[in-house]
Image (tube, rainbow, N blue to C red; front, side):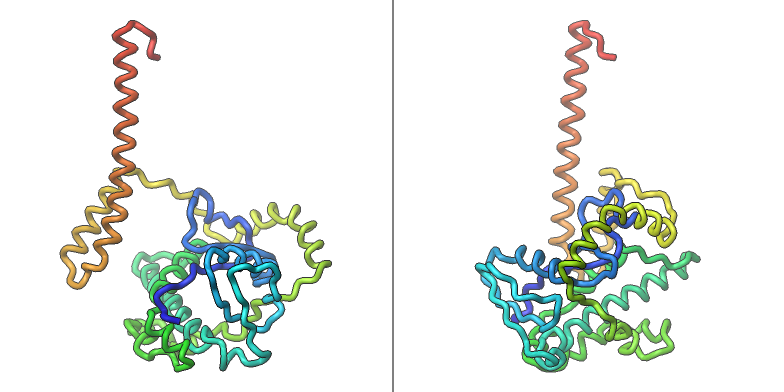
Length: 290
């Protein structure tokens, strides 16, 4: 309710292993998948039990995907009365809408970059996760506080820094931001459904791989940047921070990345030095070092 802590997002897609995830070790959000990209009672229960490290009062919509989970030790579920979500669920008072506005702003910016580079706009599942992570970070404490007080979302927050919407859209931005308002995202799962899903899952991965080859870009997989390239990029970022006004708040994040890269460079240097010392020792003793 204070707005100063936001849980990481859980994103649900259709493909369990999208091709764009290849080589990625850490996703920006949690990710699960099923054939309809819906939240199910199983996914909700698993997600809920991961939150049991502290006491939580969880306000939950009354829908089939939100069952009364048993054996919860630290979490108490408070179910809203049926057909009252639009009035009583704080997330529906503007938080979700604000997230969508920021996400779709990022989509527009990505589209503009594609036009500038004379490239076709491509948005992979990984791109969507990255933009959702950024959009959720931009939902302010003030907006969350207002929504929990059942007030309308702060008008300054959704409209902030989105003038380029007028350049790209022929419809009001609010309509664009809420275009999927009525999309069905939940499902009641029966025992029969669970059994069918388990059997189908064994044959699904090969089909999903083929679908991804068709639906996603066929670009060569990205290679992990070397430490030298990351270090060079950090120098550019540092110059930008130091030469731009009102960017002091970015310095802690920059320093955190810089420390991580420096530590990796030191470890790599120690490894190289150790290898050279071993080789020199072997040469001095006359041992074959080939």
